[in-house]
Structures are given as C-alpha cells and as structure tokens.
Length: 472
Image (cartoon, rainbow, N blue to C red; front, side):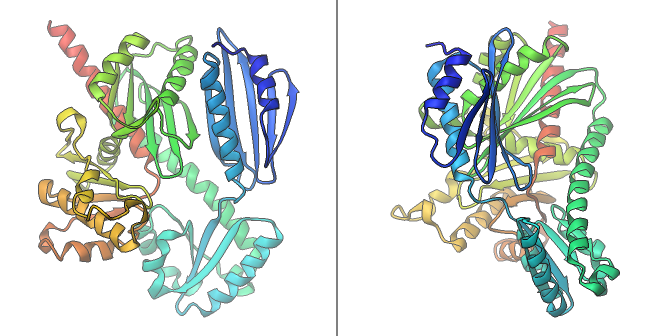
C-alpha cells in the first residue's frame, strides 16, 4: 500500500514513544528527542515524496542514524521508522572518548589524568582519562582514541605516531604539563581531533587525484557492517574529484537500504551529472527480505541493477576493495592482504592484491574465510559466547591461511580483540618461519581505502566494458 507524507507523519505521532519526546513542527517535520539524542524526520516533495530520517548524538554531534528513501511502500516506511526509534532508545549511553596519558613511570600522568577527569565532568564532556608508564603504552594504547605523551618522553612522539596510526598522538606542551592546566589540554585535544579528521580527508583526495586520471563520472557506494551498525557511504567522483560525499548509518545490513539510496541518489544526481557507471562494494552476506544471511551473487546483482538503473552497475567484495585502496595509496608493498573481523565474532573476511592485481576468486568470493574456524571447534561450542582467547586464536588461524597461500608483505588487520601486532607476530612464528611473517598494521577506520578501492574496481570494470564494445 502506498503511504503519503501526511499519513506517515500522523502515524509516527500515534506510535509509542517511550524513552523520548515527539513533536510535529509542521506537516513535513517531526522532532524526536531525549537527553542524549535528537532525531529529525523531514519530508521533501520532489517528483516522489522522499523521507529523511536522522539521529544526532548531542555530546559530540555525531550522526548515529541517517537515511532517506521514497515513500512508496507503507510497511517498508513503517519498518524504517521503528528501526530509527529503537536506535534512539538504545542511545542512552553517549560515546566515550578514551584518552591515555603516558610518562616514564606513570606517576605524574596519573595525577594529571585525575585532574583532567574532574575537568571533563565539570564541562559535561564524555571523556575518560587514564595513565600508564611508557613501557606499558604499546600493549594498552590501541584501545584508546587519543594518546598524550608527557614532555619528558616527547622525543618518542614520531615513533609512537608510526605505531598508533589510527589514534591521535600528541606531546603535551611543557607549560600545560608543568601547571597541570586541565582546561587548556582538553581544548588542545578537541582542536587536534577535529584537525586530524580534516587532514585525513584531504590526504584521501590527494591520493585519488594522484592515482586516477580519467574522464569518468562514477558513483561509488561502500557497505561496511559491524556487530552493532552498518555504514553505507556513497560518493560521486567526477574526473577523480570528490563532488558529493554522504553516509547512511543503520543497525541493520539490508539490500533494501541499498536500493533506497540508489533510488533517491540516481534521481537527484542525474538531473545535474551524466553518470557513466556505479560501483558498489558489499560484504559477502546481507539481509535480503526475511533472509538474514543471504549469500551475495555479485554478477547476478550487477545484471539486475544495471537493468533497473539503465547504466553499468558493478559489484565487488568490500574487503577486496579495502585491500585495493590501500595498495593504490602507498608505494612500499607489492603484495597486500586485509583481514576484517567484527568485535566478538569469528566471522571474518579477507582481501588480497598481488603485484597490482586484486585477487577476486570464483564469484568474487575469494577471502570469505569465516567458515573455516567454525569447522575447527566442537559442535557443542556456542559461537556467540567465545572467550577472548578463542577469538584471538581464530584471528591467528585466518592470518595463517593468507600467509601460507599468497605470502603477503603486509596485512592490514581490523580486529578489536587483537590490537597488539607484536603479540600476533609472536603467535604466527609458532607456525611459520621468520621470513614468512609479514608486516602487520592495525587499522580501525578503513573508509578511505574502501572508497578508493571501490572506485578503482569500477573504473577497471567500466573501461573493460568499453573496450569490449569497441572491439565488437
């Protein structure tokens, strides 16, 4: 049944809203709000009515839920709102920014950490401060967002930054440390966190401009699923330049959400741009209707979506895209692997690039290693309640598979349970020789690698398609 915009907002007002307040500001806008989160529902009247649902965490202004879709099917529209409301209710706890201070012994930074915690509480900031001695830093620092070095070990800054690539690492200015000026240090951390994000984006643009010289307009979508959320990021590239960049954040991992994005974006973008192709990187399984772990057929989806949107649409595996994107953005390694394992899960995926060529495998399912470890544990083992040691064992098991088959020079590892790369290397040395052990790099945010890799996949596939048409 088709649902109109007025009917949709009126239905929302009648729905149960325990845990948050609801108010209608006009016919096209509804506000949902509690102490931690503000939500907005906006209706846009284009050729078809489009609904936009968003949730923003108040403590750090981070979008935790964002999507838009055409108001076509009543049950689909209601399902998306209920998902939004459920996400809002679960967000009573704000995201904590974890900050680790370090000095030679840890004594002075322990005192400063307590002063900083008190100041953060006064300022209503959700920051958590801890302190360790420098010889403990490399075993504990990977679980923190920010690392602050005391002036007496400031000379170690470059070395620490090289190890903790995904964290913000700063040396505390001597005048701030000497006076234990908590307010100034918190201001410095907040400023530098914002600057780090901006710098990362600028570097990603540079990589694309450097590596891609083309006249193609390509729409790129990347889907990354974790235990508690799914991020669907999309960009429009014109001649290698980023024209538009947005993301949708949801708690489910569904092909229907992907269709919503393509429906609205293709309609809007085709009015201004001539899009040559679309490339989408997906995990190996997604929800499709009532099927929770539907196995993706990349070639099948390509044919179906190309017919639906009347332009070439290509699909690739998301782990392969990350590996390809990382490879393209550096010059040190020729053989690259990427291992991704969501927190608390033995399910995992890998991507590989061998001397410039991504290894897709049959049906683009090379790297779907998640089923291997399940076969190694006893049938009575509850895989939802594995110990930390079992989870670490599964990571080592999967890495050995990559090391044995393609002998990568480096493996990027996205795994919360194994932040210590030296510990992982020691485990690998129990099974393979020293010369087989690759460099290991811990990563958390792989979105820029995924964007670049997905675009490269799309360009390769599009150029091959054009070449075949010319030679016919």
